[in-house]
Image 1 (spheres, rainbow, N blue to C red):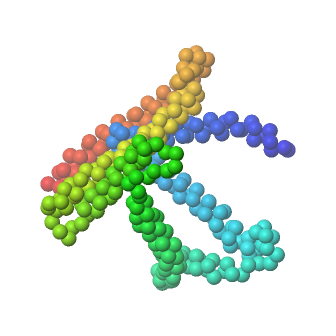
Image 2 (image 1 turned 135 degrees about the horizontal axis):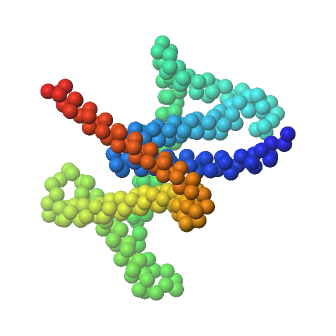
Image 3 (image 1 turned 120 degrees about the vertical axis):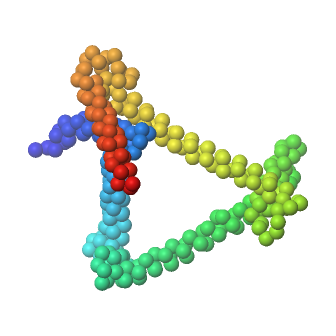
Length: 282
């Protein structure tokens, strides 16, 4: 039997189930806007569990198989004519991490952790110094009159003003973080200017973060409106959906009412437990 027709037949059903599952989990997460509740906790645990399982699978197939299994037992798949026995020591070190589950041998897990921290520090420290120290220092060493051939004087003056603002900003922020001397006189003026510049930078960063979160919200709302809405008789095809297939709207309404009923029941049970907890504390 050819599996292709079977897969094609089940494809719309699987897609519809995926959309329904995504919509219900989205609404469950947004129920936290009301308050912390079991529905939100269930969706949160599902998200954490699925994410952990997904990354375990990705790590296994993208790291363990091509870097350990294939070099040892299928060298042709990685372009070698013989097994690569040099992968055995790092593989054994990796397996030692699992000794954390055995109390008597848990100390062996320190060996691979030492290698991981040492190698990570050796890679990260030079990169951080290059990116956050040397690069920043070199970017501050700019000309106050960056004139180029064929460039107008006004453009050079604007570029010089921007470079001057950059230099003054760096010096002002450094004045604020200089705590070996009281912030008085010229140092105090620079420190106060540094505070203003820091607040502007933090505000811009926070605004950028909020914009990113709003874009995620817009994406989920569009998913509910454009993908899930037509399936339940809402969205752009609301009128046709209500008349052609009213059961979709009825099913969606029943599910939402069930979720609302669970929230109300949880609220009442929480309110009933509160006086009991108060009496026990007294």
